[in-house]
Image (tube, rainbow, N blue to C red; front, side, top):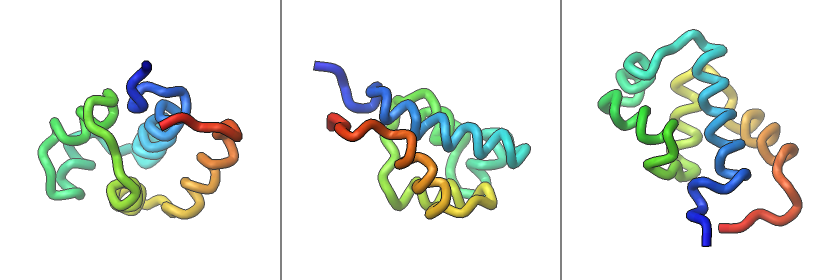
Length: 85
């Protein structure tokens, strides 16, 4: 069985967060600073080593100047009807 951190749905979520970071012109070090974390925290998230929960999703989107609800809504629109966990 495939780990859920590497499902297509999870990869879409990571891509959405990474794309938002790039659009904001923010590197991993700056995002980590904004979150009060080390750069490795951001790297581990973006590489799929560390899972993101809904509160972290919210905090990351806000730290990048994004609207977490709009980002999540756009993500949901791309997800398949059935998502494995």
